[in-house]
Length: 459
Image 1 (cartoon, rainbow, N blue to C red):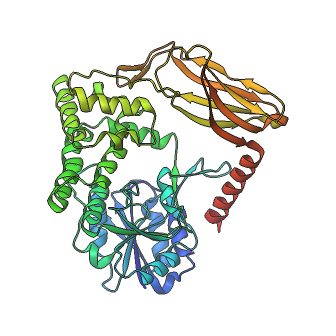
Image 2 (cartoon, rainbow, N blue to C red):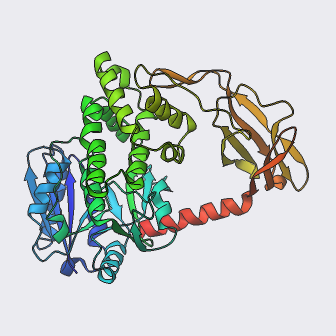
Image 3 (cartoon, one colour):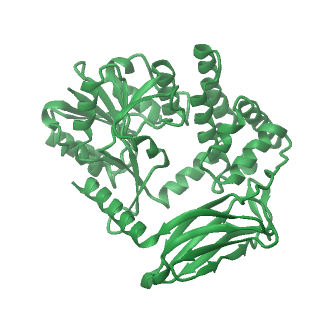
């Protein structure tokens, strides 16, 4: 089975060679089965020279194609024009990411066993501070791989969404019927992928490999900021991408299927994250109104349950629901308080064997009901949590979503002999267990997972 890997790059001198090397050293057989197309999108640094050096070393397998800077959609389309005719699958790799050692071998094995499947994807892991202080973590959507390698039907598993091209492998014959929309500056890859999925309704996942994407937390943060400072990221994006999803789903199925509703909800939440603060700065007041009303129209096609099912802070869900209900001008409404406070739980391990249990209070509460508290029961004692309040307003755009003085979190500090027990909420009438914890075992599992990922990366 033959593969072509397309790598568009622009000023990627720091990591381009590392990315390409992760393909060259594949266990599948680079010389016989793999073509690499390096699409130089008008680079002005030394990455073109690096690419040329790789071409000289592997002239039968690696090609550099120079194009005038025009963005990744155009670069990928040009790359597709140069794929060999005998290619079976086309993979896409960003110029600062890497494949695990057996990626292409396992994709090939899966493809041979599932001849009707046109798209195959691996798990995704992020790399922070690449070098001496590697931090590796799993993408939230990796829950799709918990059942192992399999075929996913989007009608049966609507939460198994996929929308990013890096690491995705597409059957070449199927890909010939598609193209990346070069008029879009954002979302051209997810538009192509969703078009394919709505037609095919199935895709494959291969569990025992990994696509590692590098996050330069400073450099990429500036790129993210720039993207949110572009007017086309707002109303034009909603209409070109989300509205296309809605239209295509209705055209084929007669309705907006749950997969599309969840996909839009999952992606749309990005507009409300705390780092995306440019809404008021970028758009004029009339553009703000048009954007919010366009958003309201789209969210009106989404059943409330798909918004509430998102793994995201409750304030984001509440903002989405407020826009869905109220449109413009923005009138933020908090959800009714639950009988048992809605929380998210996590742990911090401290030096000398100490730890913290942290319970983020998702709701907008100024106090817990009388005789109510959070606590942990360990083998030796029951420890009540300390409640912490916000010292400043929490904003989405310029809207106050959690006022100063509301409860932010409940926190319990544990000593080395208190690392096993139950975390619970108690009120005047009942006691509700939130989680059992065994922090020593959890820390060991966490370390083992990280070592496993590092071995997969460094093989």
